[in-house]
Length: 153
Image (tube, rainbow, N blue to C red; front, side):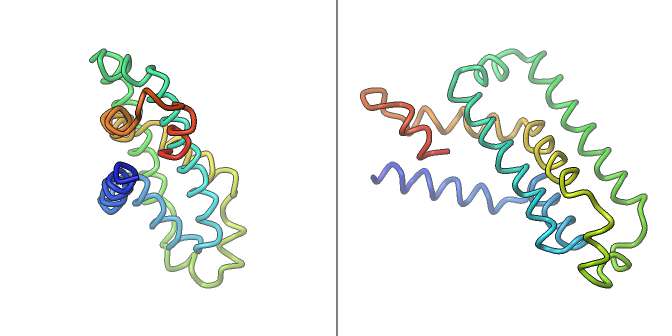
């Protein structure tokens, strides 16, 4: 149990450091309102869970141990984030979107926000490294690994 509390503390402190997911969420909350931003947040969460599965299964170790694969993943993620930034800056002023929540909900596809959140999470190499570095420290191989994985995820 003390190991779980340490893990939760580390995860909480990591979540406090702003990254692409935080920027994505704040931008969507300002532009479209909190209710609509929840669709993007759902995509981020599912993407993190997929990365946790990949990391726990060992594929993440292969990605991070092979510099070429890891570099390609970083560039894909960076280009995707630049694309999102460009799309955000090239549209009309966010203050125009905040006139009413009803008008802003019509301006964006909720499924599009979900998929943008999913891709932003999946293409973030920091998340892969985070899970690879943390999971082995807190998983006891003498106990059922699936249960520990689900709790930590």
